[in-house]
Image (cartoon, rainbow, N blue to C red; front, top):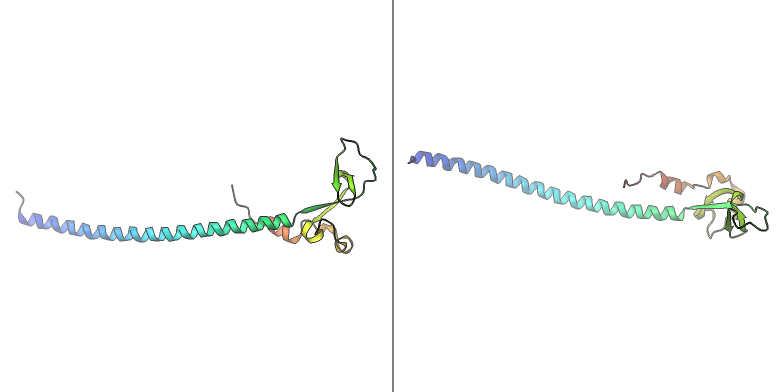
Length: 142
């Protein structure tokens, strides 16, 4: 049979271990709370990121390419001709393409503005500054 001092020593060791267990339990609870808070923060950032990407997609849709064609001079086109329908001109050869402009900046209402036609070099029309800026932003990896 074990002696009384052995039981006291064993009890002392168990009490020391219990104190260490309590410290570890407190640390686990602290880390769990940090994880919970960080997870909520990451989820909020994810929602904000998705909302911003949706807004950027709308900007890209609004500032879209609008192609300008010249009248090709053909009164009729063969059935297999590569043509496009242009509001102001009707059916024209796709090869009559001249340049592109921004639908929002230079062609609101699906018609090129007089200011765009007469007042600047069209190389600055597409992509417009807004679209170029949006296009330069990093994309979310799939």
